[in-house]
Image 1 (cartoon, rainbow, N blue to C red):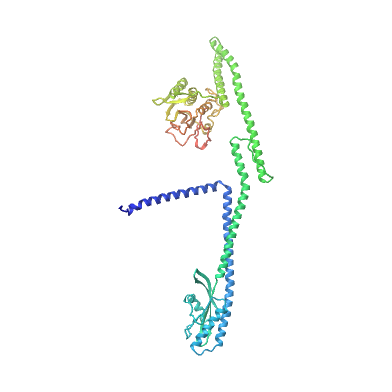
Image 2 (cartoon, rainbow, N blue to C red):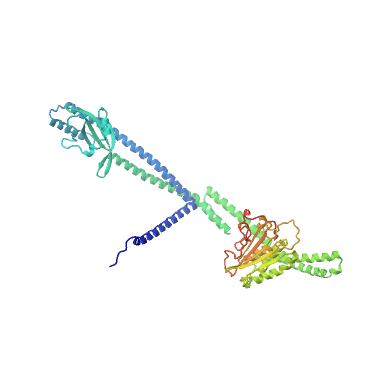
Length: 575
């Protein structure tokens, strides 16, 4: 035989189940509420129909309540007039009967009372009629008919206030009462008046009238009003739904077409039906879409012509540039035999030809990116080797500028699938840019990696960047000060090409800066193809600076919009 478990130990599992059920019910309710709120906020039609239904229910409720009260008051007043008139007639008949009778014994007096009450019940519309002895009466005999005494429950409906008003008054007095019955109570009216009986003097005559039929009539009218009100609200809701659908459907169609246009489907148009305002909206929208399509087509053609022009010119300039280069080298080799002015001109010619060739090379690279012909020649390489190769190429420029290059890298290999030529070009551009604007201060290079990505940060402590300059730092042919003489190298395409190389790797190139505190550029690339970057293993903002101040560009998703208020003013940068 197993002992039953009782007490707190037995109640604990039940409490746990109850709590789980309560939490589940709360989650279900919260989910339903969220869906309703979302539906309310996302649909103009639902809001209009719901608001109209609520207003309709309120209006129908107020109107139905007013009509119900008026009908109730009308039925009550009409029935009260009938009751008072009938009781006045019955009271007069009873008084006439008492006046004409001359009873000589108590038995005759009792019979007179019974006959009078019975005659009143049969000849009037009241449900009950009975007599009560006034304080001055000497014979306590009161019946509702000739053989049965009055029902105590009915006699109890006569309040003391009513009896006090009836006693000593020649007028009728009435009060509303609730008549007890088998199914509850029914509304009623008790009417009382004083009459003078033979021998006993003044007695109280009361009539009880039921208002059950009027109550049934009122309930029927209220049901009819309720059904009519619900039908009216439903009709109002249906009409509102149809009207709002006819109004909202073209707007939805316009929104869908606008989304399709934004996705690049420039041939999408709204259907035009009729000649009303919605048809005018559809025609205007289609005309706007046609205009946008024409402008986009012209811009694409112009952009294509520009890219084609740059590519063709870059290629066509190769041949004459080669000839000029050969002639310049001959002159430069014989500069010792020339006069000083001619020798200096030969040196300047060679230097400018070098810049010209760099510009052509960058233009050709940009044209390949624009044409989608740039290819990634990826291989598994140690990123540290690529970083050191870029640093070694920048050392001569750093020595001429008096800039110290500091490199910090992990001790173990940092292997990633990269195109070494492109990554080295990105780092070289960042290093040259940092050295040229470091103002003799150190330039730091940090390499960090995790399981998903490799990051290289190039930080200088020079003049920094302004907010306006930071917005255009990766733009083509952009310089911080267009009026400044170009004493340093740079085609204005270095950072533009760098961010395209980062795109090609599926990575990001980000920038940050502060006035007088320098700038920081971070290149982040995935270690394997197909990895989507969600962070970087190296910080972009230096620890000694405000982490909430800065600007960055996401290279894989494209350049985001900038908030100038979140970017500090810097005074620098040449792309």
